[in-house]
Amino acid sequence: AALVALSDALKDSGGRATLITTRRPNYGVGALRDREAGQQSHYLRKECEQRLITPVQRVPNISAISGNDKDIVAGQFYRKLGEECAKYRVSLDIVVTNAVLSMPVSSMGSGQSQRPNMREYLDVATLSELCRATCGKFKWLRVGNECGIAIRGDDSDRLSANDSFTAEQLREELKRSALAYSGSDVVFKLRCSHGVQVKSYSPSLPLGNIIGDGIVDSAELEMSHMDSSSTIAVLLEHKVGGVVDTRESGKRGSEPPLVFFQSAVLYTTMTGRRRVRVSTLGLVTSKVPADVFRSADLGTVTTILTRQAISDIDRKDEGSLHIARDNVFQNCVSILANYRMHTTARTSPDSQLILPESLQLLPLFCLSLRKNRMFRHSLHKTMPSSKPFPTADERAYHISCGRMVLPNLALQSVHPNLLQISDMRTRDGEWITPPTLETNNFIDEEVITASMRAVCQLPKSMNPSISCLDADGMYILDDRFAFYLFVGTNVAEEKWREFFSVSPENNFANNTGVPVGKMALTNTESAHKLRNILQQLRMLNSPNTTLGLNARPTHAPLILVFVGRGSVFEEEMDSLLIDDPESHEKSYVDFLCAIHRAVREKISKFSG
Image 1 (cartoon, rainbow, N blue to C red):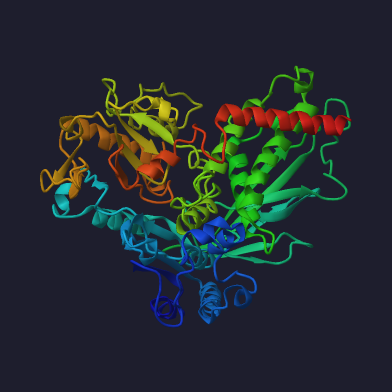
Image 2: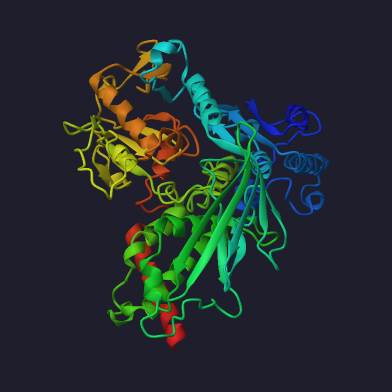
């Protein structure tokens, strides 16, 4: 009912609406039942787990599958609501504040009445699909006061001293939405010169609605809303007849032909003005495959691979997590095999795995993507009765974010960054201004100004592996969704209290040494450096403050993880140490060996 009221209120003018809630809709025509009821049985069968991450709007033959009229009504309701919002240019954002809790479970035996560290089922798949259809964003504030640390920056004097961590999180998320430069009533179109055409958008279900079949001309993409973090990906293909040679490249000394691409975005500004932004790009063609690999952009390749893997999940009747995981591996093998067969790498010994210079990190990305919460297995291979991780809601949330991943975040979102903060160097955490550049006629003043922007020196980076963690150390693990403050088992209380305080004092959970209460960074020198480091990481080296504000999919919280003391997010942080092997996936070295064997088999198949 609340979603319908927001939509109706903006029907005449269009606009953007935000719903803040703590649970899934459970009353009225839009009520969503707990599709996860039954716990482990859904995760033991692949088709059942696939159904959990499929929105009710897209579940085929839903009446035959579920036998529940509630699912039929909900599917029709959210499908119609999404279509009406798109028609009237209404964008819906949904913000859910749902922290970890202990849920009562009656079926676990007489000796147990609660299952710790579980969440109430939200049906993120259905709610995030509604946001996708209306070009809105689904935001999940899943960290509560029990393990979140308030940062309170330099403007803390203007804020309430009694603000909790959850209040700070909600305020920052709403600030991101309010300050982001955005446009409404958007129409996007990409035109290509002769010989090339748009094959499809990626993923197959992008933000907004695709208008046209793309047979005669490229299809348009209509969106209710767009902001600085919006990225549109298209797949191109060659047309019959090839590229038209307008430069007479057949003659000696002439240059190779060009292909041109022109993108146009028609939108309405926040002040109500209608504008069009046109960008034209001309690229030189080549008949040498080595030139293609040499000019490959890792950010673009990883973005396309991520979105194609999500398309493998979205495919009607055939989509599955297993197919997506396998295709990630096969795509990596195909790229490396073609590089080996069609470049000078074919002269290298067969015992060596040769990687393109521009795609040195491609195997690492593919392994990290398979281990990411979008595609990893939920249950341990040897312990199928263990608590599922990720849950259906967690997987659906990361798939929703992966659908909109940016090229500069595609690799970092699946391969976390580990920084040591317990033994920082002298200048770590301090703002440093680069030396002045000498001005000349070839450097624009704006470029010089951007280059002179102060940056924070980050601590030394480490591989995300358990072997790099010391029991006496403290670390920050950054997966672009959250900052995990890792506190080793042997870290003294005096040491971690240099970074954050707990109120009320000496409040610990069940004598485990894990602090419970309102936690916030202190005013010590160590905490001040940590604030600077977090601020720099949030910006992702963006030269523009506004762009840096929306560089990440969410306002990353600071999460406390005490190792070996039952911290809520300890298991989640362990899963992010992706350089280590896990029950279903190999270590990076073993994965490289598997890639090498597959490449050799593919080459021998073609050559034989």
